Image (cartoon, rainbow, N blue to C red; front, side, top):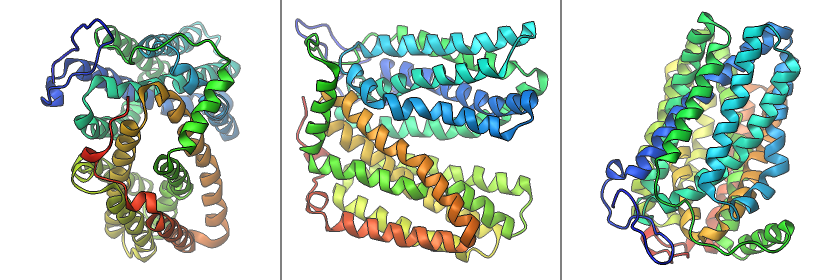
Length: 423
C-alpha cells in the first residue's frame, strides 16, 4: 500500500498495494493523531468530574453534564450522518478538533482569571459533545479511503486498541495533572486536539470519493439512508443486534463493581480488576482481524453471541477476585472481536456516499440504547443483586443468540474476502 494516493483525472482512490499499516503514512498520521486525542479526552473526562465536584459539591451536577453530553448523540446523529455524506470529511474533522480545542482553552483561561462558572462547564460539555458527534462519524466514514479494503479489519482493531489503551492511560495522567493544577488536564486535552488538527493537515489522501453537490432537502437524504439500510437485511440485523446487546454490555462495569464488593474487594482491588479486564479488550482487538478474515460472518458472530451469553453466569459463580478478573477478561475478548468484525463488514458493505448516514443511524440506535441499559442494570442490581442480574442478562443474551443464529441472512453471509465491492 502506497503512503498516499496518486492523482488521477477522476477522484483519488485509497492505496491498493497491501503493505503493512505501519508503512501507510496517511493511516499513521490519522491513527497517531487520534491516539493523542483519545488520551487527552480521557484525561479531561475525569477532570470534569473532579472540577464539578470541587465547584458544586454535587454529584447530581456531574450527572447533568453526562446528560448534556448524550443529548447531541440522540438529537443530531441522523442529521450529522447526512451532512457527513455531503461535506468534505477532512475539513469537518479539522473544524471539530479546532472547535473542541477552543472550548477547552476557554475553561483554562477563565479558571486562571477566577471566573469559571458551572454554566460555562455545561456549555463547553454540550458544544464539545456536539462537535464529537460530527467528528466521530467522519472519522469512521473516512477509514475506507485511507486503507485498502483487505486491511480494514486491522485498522479497526488498531483503532479499538488505541481506545482501550487511552482509557487505561488517561485517568491516572488526569489525576496527576489535576494534583498539579486543576486546569492542567483541560490544557492537555486542548493541546491533544491541536496535535490531531496538525496530523489531519498533513494527510494528503481525500477522505471521500468524488460526489455531486447536494441539491435536495436534508430530510430526503436521511430518508434515503433509512431506506437503503432497510434494504440490506444483514446490515439491518447487525445494527439492531448491536443495540440489543448493548443493553446488557453497558452496565458490566457496574455489575463487576457490585460483585467485587460482595467479595469484600477494596476500592484499589476493584479498580485493578477493571484495568486488567480491559486488557481483554486489547487482546480481542488484536484477534479480531484473524476471525474476520478466516471465518464466515454468520459462524463467528453466532458463536460469539452464544459464548458471551454462556460466560455471563460465570460472573455469578466467581468465588474470588482472581476468577472474577479472568471472567471479565474473557468476556471482553469476545466482545471486542465482535466489534472489529461488525465494523469491518459494515464498512465494506456500505457505499462511500452512504457511510455517514448508515453510521449515523447505527450511532443513534447503539448509543441511544446505552442510557436505557445503564438504567436497567441499576434497577436490576437494586432489586435483585449482582448474581440474579447476570443470570437475567444471560437469559436475554441467549434469546438474542438464538434469533441471530436462526436468521438466514446471517447464516449465509460470506467471508470478508467474498463480499461484493461497494462503490
